[in-house]
Image 1 (cartoon, one colour):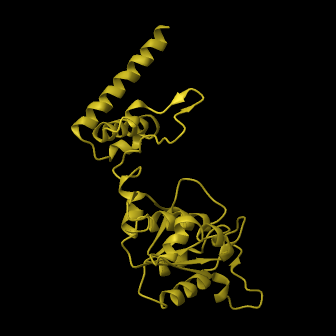
Image 2: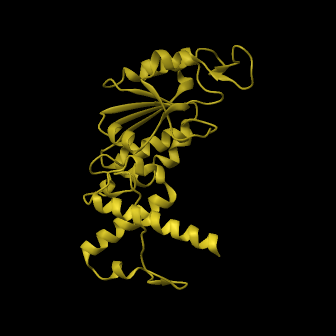
Image 3: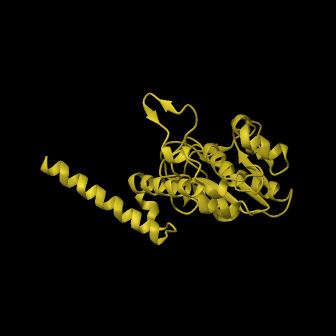
Length: 253
């Protein structure tokens, strides 16, 4: 996969995108990363990329003509690619988005800054806009790093021959169960016996139950779209009964 990132701050990507799995993905040929400085397409000696907003208000707005010129120039360098702007107003990025985008041959990500990008760039040059959450960051570079990482690790082979992405949290709408390693005892907290016994079927059942319990406690919203078996539904009903009993016990105390 080729990912092109258009940004006013290309140096921000040097650490994150050249470390750990992103470095390995590039070293092993799974990822071709190209970070472009948007100021390359400025036309004045001050390399101006933004201007004051029409209608007043604080902050500065990135120029549409600059962004459009940059997207068109980068688009012409390789196979046609969808273009996604980073914006808190965009569609909420998710595991499903990461899996879908990982199948593309190429992606172009555009990083907003200041008060954002002149909307005409979105209308003319973007396929869509993406958001990584309901909060505002100081820049779109961080969002682009998150999206690139989430997408690339879904490419078959990036995580190694043993894979692993298909077993992670959120794949089927349920969080993963807890993970443990040595030592066996940490300040009185011991690794669950089932994980020590070597019964793989029992371990799989425990992990599923623990993942469901964690989802029920921390992210119940995920369960509305999760893939659940009858056994899963029975466990969730059990958790609900446990909670009801705990509430009743506190009320009676």
